[in-house]
Every structure is written in C-alpha cells, then in structure tokens.
Image (cartoon, rainbow, N blue to C red; front, side, top):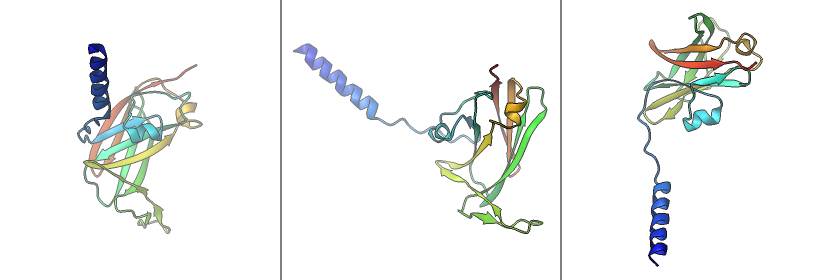
Length: 163
C-alpha cells in the first residue's frame, strides 16, 4: 500500500513539474543563428554549422526599440577577418509593406519586424545551398556582425565543411 501511495505521489509531482512553464529568458539584444525557421521561432539557436549540407542560415537580430522603418546591415567575416558576404535589408515595425526611397522610382518591399517580449526580432534567411557559402566554404570561427541604427551586434559561428 505504501509503495502504491509513494508511486502516486511521485507521478503527481512529475505531472506538476512537467506542466509548469519555464520562465521566459530575459531579453538580450544581439545576433542569434539557427539552421531553420522553426528553430529560430523556438529560440533554439546554434553556433555550429556545416555549410555542405545547410539550405539556409537563419539570422535573428534582437533590438529593443527600432524606428518604424529601419535597416539591418549584416556582414559575415571569415576566420581570417575577410568580409565574405554582406547585405542590407529594410524592416518595418508598423506593418508597412513598402516604402519609397530617395533615388529609387518604385516602392521598396519591407520585411516585418516581429514583436517579442522586450523588443523586436529582425529575422532573415541567408541562402547557403548553391550560394557562395557552399561554393567557397571556409572552415573555422566566423564573425557575424549586424548594424542597426548605429548599434553594432555580433556573434561567432563555427563553420565546418563535410568532404
């Protein structure tokens, strides 16, 4: 009888532990990387990537309060410090799908900045398969640098290339 009672209490405690949600992580501005969008959404970030088998590298830049329309400049630096790839992408925090830019005679499409607890997520998929990343891979520790409104954020990533 005691064994049944103890087993019941343990099962009840396990159920309580499993059903309690984990507290949210404190908001941390910066650059975060993932192998796919689902991992990015779950906050399952990674630091190591095999460019020989990766379709896209997902980049998330977390910022506290960006302007209603803002740009993110991304740069990927090889282990030797060489600028390997760079891009600049426009984002909107207020749902605007397009905006006009000086010198451009057509509207520019904006990427939606997603509201998250503590700030905004500026997400972007960087194609790897079939791109310069896969054609000319460099193994080692890379630096990913993002600039948003004069602030610079960076993170390292370990790149490997399977033979």
